Length: 180
Image (cartoon, rainbow, N blue to C red; front, side, top):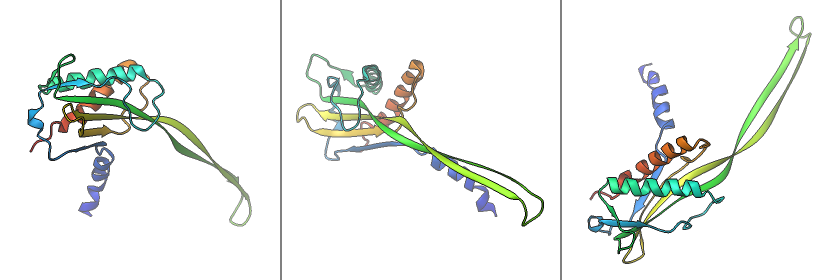
């Protein structure tokens, strides 16, 4: 019976699993990177953008701040070692709710009445993900990319959006530069 007692904790840990994914070019020497700059806004992947320029500004500011915290310096006018493309991707997702309604009455076993029904509703919502790409400035080749899915969802309050973006950027860039 003891293993069953740990099941709820295991399920909770699984539900809180990290949504950050990253990949990089293993042949790349990341130790030579010291300076960076951000790509101009507009570089993007697949998905809906919906012209969310405030979200773009939040992401760009958070990425620049996090990279500077990691010891990289920003070279806007000079020749940076790497360029950073960072952008949100929004997708319309759906979730379904089903409601069951039933009632009945009666006397005993075979006599009486029961009535029941159920109905389902589909609700759309907008899911936002963060994508960060690191491009070698000399070769113009993608050398590192990271994404955090679903972190930009339900951010109606600007303060909450700033905090969520900063947290997502920090988590996404946690594995940059890769350790050898």
